[in-house]
Amino acid sequence: MKILLTGANGYIGMRLLPLLLDMGHEVVCAVRDAARLAVDEDVRSKIKVVEIDFLDDVLQSKIPTDIEAAYFLIHSMSTSTKDFDEMEATTAKNFNLHLKDTHVKQVIYLSGIVNDVNLSKHLWSRKNVEDILYQGSFALTVLRAGIIVGSGSSSFEIIRDLCEKLPFMITPKWVLTKTQPIAIRDVMHFLSAVLGHEKTYNESFDIAGPDVLTYKQMLHQYAKARGFKNWIVTVPVMTPKLSSYWLYFVTSTSYKLALNLVDSMKIEVIAKDNRLQQLLGIKTHSYKEAIAMAFIKIEQNLVVSSWKDSMISGRFKQDLEKYIQVPKFGVLKDEKKIKIKNTQAVLENIWSIGGDKGWYYANWLWKIRGILDKLWGGVGLRRGRTHPNNIATGDVIDFWRVLLANKNNKRLLLFAEMKLPGEAWLEFKIDDNNVLHQTATFRPRGLLGRLYWYSIVPFHYFIFSGMIRNIAKTTSSFK
Image (cartoon, rainbow, N blue to C red; front, side, top):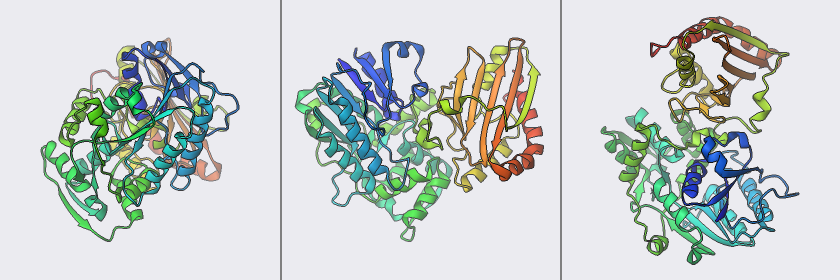
């Protein structure tokens, strides 16, 4: 079957793509930026990629007319706290227009459980998108999921951050709201099983795990599964805004995502029935089992996708390609170079930078900079990195975004997503003479930008000098 996969470089899409290929389907991936589709050469050779921004007016569609099914995995919740619902509605309408002249028979939409009478803006928007998609020229299958628990999912990573960092928590009253989480493995099972299943056409189904839990119970069960105890005190005085700041500062989530999540956490997300489970014969995993499966992937460094690598986790609003050409004029630079002996070992050091490994010199200063960035409304260091030594274009490394990662050309280019009075790049490159070049480039914005650069020049001297020396070494962990 020929399938259109939207949101192919998102958390769900990155996991669904290899599954569809293993099932023998032909897949067309619709993404805003093809450079960000982080798949290996083998997968790339098996798929077709089209660049489409579904927020743009539909003039001429790039989608092949002979597609038979499509997955709608697009949302805008983290891009705005005000008009994301309008953006999602526009996306759905344009999606319908793109598919109008194709042979598509079925569209599968992953939504959220919307059974409460009073819906949050986020859940109302998901329901509105569902209503718009039902107007398309195809049969629609809607899967309304509870909170998704899996390695790299936003919900799981927030719970992980809270429990691992705060053994004692003073929490808002929304932690007593009931929800029904579902394992990412079960979500994948449902998404693949309904494909081409005519009994699911023009139907909306709730999908969830077997456990109905409060968020407080989820936090406690996580701690128990990890072998420690945590204490949670609930207070009624935390406003949604204070709750959002609390999540923002303690976890790796962005403020926009935190605000929209808190708005939804006041609403019970519980499945009405298990019709689809019975129809497909699927037995879902418990919350404890979902946690255990997530940590198997984490401990084996097999996390396929993470919400942190999505563009919405940072400051980017345009395509990465806009920033790949590092400016040469009107910029300030710190350039270092050093002769190396073992090119491959040094490349491994470069490809392991950030996250748990750190930045090879004065990690405590990097941590302070991350804290300051968080206080100023930036992304901070808590995003870490998805894999300890694999990097792909578009990935996140702490408060940097990967613009280019080419091991064959021995070059890594990063762009800063921290709050700055300007734009910053950090580049590592090994030339043909086995010389490692490390270049920090800053394009200041006005006088404030120049004052910022010159105020940190003394720190750059020590940090960047120490960093390149340690990267060039091949025998120490540099902790």
